Image (tube, rainbow, N blue to C red; front, side, top):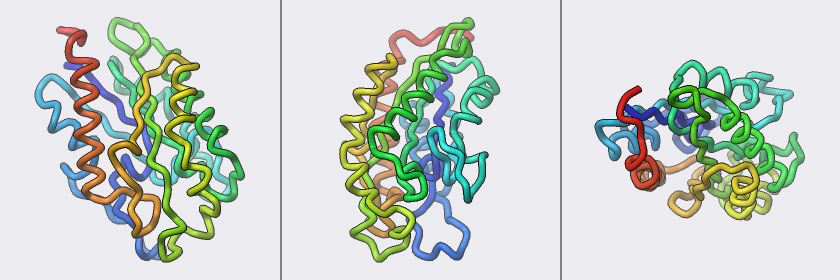
Length: 224
């Protein structure tokens, strides 16, 4: 049984596009979130573990939402708790676009690369070997096209995320991780400019399943 650990933010959690931020976020049901879609498409022989946290950043402590949003603090313990893990899939960076962090797209990609390197540096894969790591570039935001749900918090995010694909690809190559561009298969919803529509959740899950099937099925361990 090959284990795939998905580490991400609200889009991995399955958050529906937000209309009213004064109310708790709503979540797509089981089977509608991209990790579930991926698991269903892969079928027997794969276990998909989903760890999505609303507001999670790559490597930044959030001065408003708290230190627990920092992905660097949680990644290694979470991988260890599910060991052995064949593939660590990391899709983070959207929350780093918040105005309060004031960082560029290249810096965000570098933070995601640091997480990829941390994951690859563990011995939490099969037989104590490092797990394979897939760094996923999040889709670009389209906050400016919305009615302003997240506009104040994500000022300039659309421009800074526009080159996520290229920036994350370069970082993945540098740290020796695999790369996948989510923006080639999914788009941020124009409802709030950040979260994925139900259709994008499905497309992303199916596309990632195709990647995993091609890359892991041939050489996955026969016994853990």
